[in-house]
Each structure stands twice: as structure tokens, then as C-alpha cells.
Image (tube, rainbow, N blue to C red):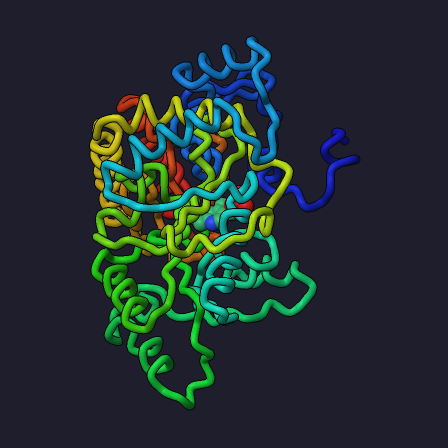
Length: 414
Ligand SMILES: *Cc1c(COP(=O)(O)O)cnc(C)c1O
């Protein structure tokens, strides 16, 4: 029995799928303590878009630490925070013509979601929030109330209230016009739906099974929100920071959300950081009304700034992600043509292969692990093998990982 079994809580999960002890990590490769290497198509669930220990981010981080500069600062002003904000404005907001205020809500994605929900309720004076089937927004109570998964909801221990789920894109396989039900409920005084403060949506549902909303569906949702005076929150915690190609996953849909949640890869290095972006007129917080101890993790500001400078000053990363995504898409399509009962999903480098026989998802992930490849599963029955390599993965590594994945699928499903 190891210390993990004797001391660590039963709640641990990823370590059960990958029962080794990891030690080193470079780029798209993790090594266990025996020195066995694993190609990483998991990328910290989207927190490692720029790979492990990326030298372009590590160098400024090491220099920052070596010079005894401020590490912890709550929301005090620091040089590192100033430089991050300046870089974020210059390289992310201004080129996209986005006018947002930036809130540091706490270190994790759930902090960004909680702040977004609280703010939407404060601004509108309404309680109800609309979310979507198979959504995932985090494990704190507010975020959980707008998430779908029944197992995780069950962990709340109290009623999860003030949220109403609506069908996500393609929930009925195109049998009904988009938003037929949602719009009817909004228009019907007898529907029982309180007027929502906000709608919260992921453009691609990472945990929900790589369900990919069409751009026209997203544009339709933004239009519906505008017509009904409902705030639109895009949770870009997993799909932002370039995962689907552009910096924000909603850019290609031509929409501008009222509030945006970012975390996972915004810190760049796998260090904790989150942002809640809001339209300036929505910034009605009183000073300190939402706060937290870890809102100024300066090492994250340093690596976040370096990531923006190295990867978002031009469109080469975005183009590379789209091209690599196409390559993954082609490999998955080939599998759909040779293996029965599978469906290819996704956009950019957020891809998945869904199995009709749901138990195959975990079996394929296990077969991939045996072959030295880390892939996670997602979806309500873990029926989707999820392929999310670092965006910085080399073409060679990507091709090798796709071969291993295809081999694992054939071994289990053919
Ligand atoms: C991971 C995730 C969250 C929660 O982030 P944590 O850092 O785990 O709290 C919220 N929304 C989405 C879409 C996520 O993928």
C-alpha cells in the first residue's frame, strides 16, 4: 500500500486511471518515476495549452523568483500584475475590439464562474440562470447548480437551485428548430420560468463529451439573449486560450458575450489563475464585495504575460492549432470509417471520439495508457475519448499519438 492509498482521500480520481507516479514533464511528454514516458493528450484538462515546463515561460519565472520579487499579494498592485494587464489589453482585448473590465476572482475556474453568476444576479436583480444540458462549470455550489452531471451534483448535499437546464445544440439531433423550447418558455407567462439574469454556455462542452455548438447556434443564442435582455456568460475556462484555434472560442461565432470566464491555460504554465471579464457598465461591484486570498499569484502573472507575448502577438499559434486540429479530425474520421459505432467530435484541438457502446470509452483510455498515451474520457457515461494535446505539440508527436490512439481503439473496439 502506498501513501496515496493510506493517507489520501478516496476522492482522488485521475491517479486511478493512470496508476503510476509521475515525476518529470517536458513539452508534450510526462515521465513516471521509473522513467517510462507518456505522450500527453490530456494537457492538464486544458491547463497546459503551451506544454509542460515550456522554456519560454520557465525562464522569466525563474528570473522572477531568483530576484525575490513579490509572490503573494492578494489584490495589491504589483509590477507583475501591471505588466500582465498591459499585455492582456494590448495583445488580447484591443486587437479583437473587446471592451472588458478584468476581475481576478480567485485562482480556479470555479472562482471565475461564481463571480460571473454573482455579478449577473447583482446587475439584473434576478435569481434565475439558464444553463445547458451536459454543461460543466465547476464544483463549488453556484457552479455546480449550473452543471449537468448527476454524480457531481449529488455531491452537493443541499438542493441546487435557481438554475434551469435547456437543450444544448443538437440535443435533439436537429429534430426541432434551435431554441424552440427556450424561446417558448420565455414568451409564455404561464411557463413557470422566472426571467433569467443570465445564460451560461460553453462553446464546446469539454467535460460534457466534446459536444460542439455550431457557430449559428451560438449566434442565435446571443441574439435571443439580446432580445430578451438576458446577460450572456461564455465559460471559456477550458476552450479559451486558443484551445479551439482563436484566443477566445467564441470569436469565430461573431458574438461578444457580456461576461467571459477564463482560467486553466491563462496562467500559461499550469499555475493557478482565473479571470472574469465583464462589459464595463456591468462592473457594479463594491470594493471587496467578492474577494479571496489567492487573487494575486504573481508567478502566474509572469508566465501568463510571457505566454501572451510568445504565442499571441501574431496568428501563428492559432493557425497551427487549426491545422493540427484538422489532422486529428482526419484521423478520427478514418476511425469512423473503419470501426463501427463511433462518432468524431470537436473543433480545433478539442477533439473526441464517442462510442455507442459507452463502456468502450474507458477501455480505450486504458488501452492507450498501456501504450504510453494519456487520454481522458468525458461525457455523462465517460463514453467519449477526449484528445486534447498541448497546442505546442510537434507534428511528429501528434502523428505518433494518433497512431497509438488508433491502435488502442482497434484493439478494444474492432
Ligand atoms: C475546468 C472547468 C471549470 C472549473 O475550473 P476549476 O479550475 O476546476 O474550478 C469551469 N468551467 C469549465 C468549462 C471547465 O472546463
